[in-house]
Length: 401
Image (tube, rainbow, N blue to C red; front, side, top):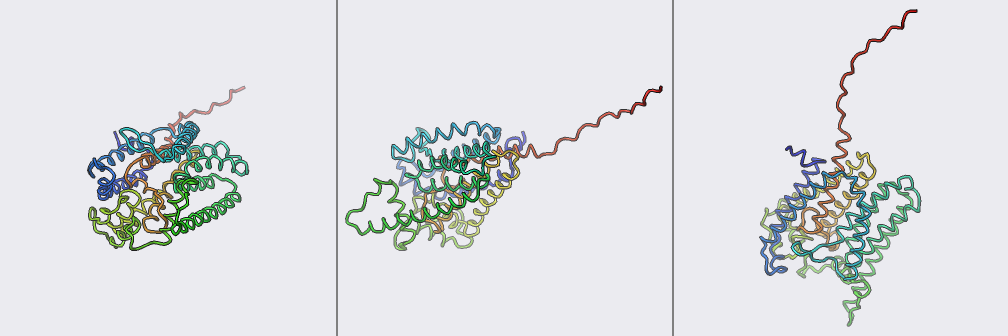
């Protein structure tokens, strides 16, 4: 069987996906050590690396399988998946947790599933309402459905909620909503986020000097964590041994060409080197050249998704590719920005590179859906076979009178 029969879709995207997973295997192997000894007393770095390899293999299997499914079926299950994930998020919010443990698998994070189904559901809605996209009512209806998931995720994970909203919001613009309402809400949202971060920062800053720190967790469970992260980002303490400072030292040590794979020092001191700060380890081992190379991989990946979305003849396929591609690219930019100090710590993983889990697997499912749409687009745009020549018929002469 030819490889083209197995890996359907955009060949360039498959190559980019392969390169990212190769980087993942190399860097997770380099950086998993301290996490294994601090979080799992009964496990070794080798066993956790084998678990990561299993997640990567399962992700490839899922991507290949989904790429062979007619993408129109995903539209049929979008509504069910959206409401099912919303119910699970409500249960998790009531339990006060972001994940639950599945025996034999590990931690399962419902917000990652909700991200995938939300994109499919919003693409489905905008497909059915393509003639009403300029109406304010349609605009508000889309925001309500997006807002349900965002509000349920927000108390436990601000960065994921922001990522979901921004990705779907940009997807709405691609789908043709009224630009006037879109820009108005964008400016309002930007002001609200800045004001919210400022309030959180100053509340945390004052609590450092108070005798009794305010119980912000009773109002919003993660507010104190957000305040700490923003405070550490604005007022960094270079003498404190934090993940952020060690990431900066790793980047500085890497220089232009890096120290080579496996020659990291700072990954031995960072509990999140395999996950949130893996880009800093890439810069330490492969230098600025390697870091720019990874950035270009993600940028080219997004460029191919945008190109594919513009070529799709089906509206649902085009919007789905635009939404999933945007979500993957924004998440990658956020992770890399955190590693180099442009943004405060968010907890977002580096897609297809960070240590495998729910995020890795379901982003891979999203990639498989993208390839399913690419396969359908390629089959539609291939030239049809030349028609067989028709037999020549001699024109008949009119009968003589």
